[in-house]
Length: 307
Image (cartoon, rainbow, N blue to C red; front, side):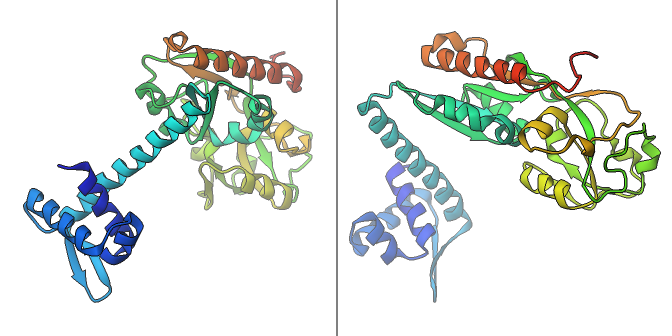
């Protein structure tokens, strides 16, 4: 199948019009129409249906247009690689990070890498469940994510760089805000619990089984809204303690003393064991590692290391 023809089809489907697609492709409408007929002949079936509002793909056309869209994206990326190389960037280093790590430590890390020369630094933010497979496939070079994950980790290596643990936080209007005594978990059963995705991916059991009422609000891959709720409402939520107190500026009075087992929330730098094969990747890995270790030393530990 001719990749160029698949790319033409993808543009037609995107615009819903052969004439508009022809303008976008800088070709005449008859030329594009002939190209689509060639594609249909090779495919053995129609790829477009004409309607009063333009054209739309057939089921076969939808699948082929998806392939064409990927081809166009890869071609655009190839052009960008060439442009980067001509401007002196010999490599691209791809760094993954979870949303909460991005919120808590990436600002200073980005500042530190802003004047990096010799390679393009590509940051990708997403959940550990989506980024870890990318690291395993080689489409990421290293990843900042929780140390303890319940996903297949072969053949990756990891180094713990930032120590933290999960605590129970309450919003400023909650009746337990600023409470100094040790609470039983049952005392929180009727509180306004929400779930935050920042604690997903751990082996430890969530406290969800102890809720008297099911949480009616869940945040996955988001932290800014959770921080706002802590500052304005009566919510109860499990969150990493050091990151919240440091990065979000949450008052320590929001942390409850509850009789529950300690749940670690350490951050590790995940990598392929053969990272040394690419000097630019190894160099940036060392810089990111040094930055996180410095953060771990300069941010107050709030008693974590003494336990």
